[in-house]
Length: 245
Image 1 (tube, one colour):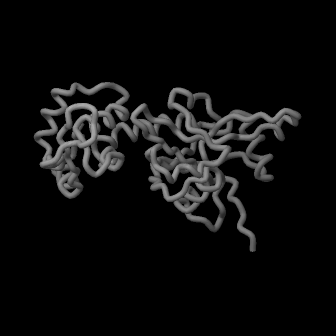
Image 2 (cartoon, rainbow, N blue to C red):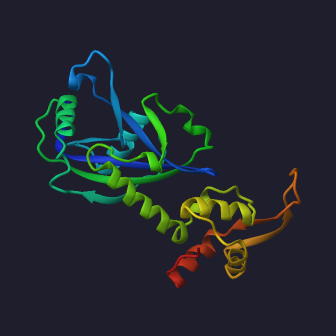
Image 3 (cartoon, rainbow, N blue to C red):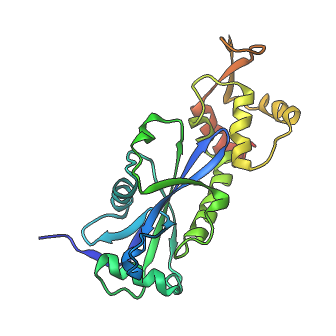
């Protein structure tokens, strides 16, 4: 028996892409030419999201939708919020588009939002579908449904998590410099970090371990290398219950 879509439950995936130049968010094209019956194809952008099948778990749905709409797979997605506002489809165009693409009558959809973070330098991202697009956070405004709001909440989660979770270190090479770590945290912060105070604080953190090694094959004076001790970090987080930034 063919699986049926549940007209009242959806998943939306907020996938942030990290690079030294900043953070972008992954959006997909929403085709509108069938909706307005225009001979000229038109589209806008939305989060990768869709309705859930009745026989499908939410986490499985999120991974499926992300792969089907963007081509990306094997991304760790964390469930972070349920969107149940009664006016999620207050824009008539959003309602008409959803009904035209699903063939269902839909009055209300509750969405479960997922959060993920990838490094844009990762070669596995080369399989991105043509309908997908990385955009700056500043460009991700006035999106369909409440997707701009979902992105903002995920952004707040990212800022908080940068100092309380090991995500910054997951984006660094196994051996890194203090400057590289500072660059990553500044991207998360959206602002600069005072280098002197930052280096002073890091000396008190035993999970950032100095190595008896320096950079090689660099045009500038080689900097000392460090490694991240995940076990010590988890102990720090448990004891301190605070951000290390």
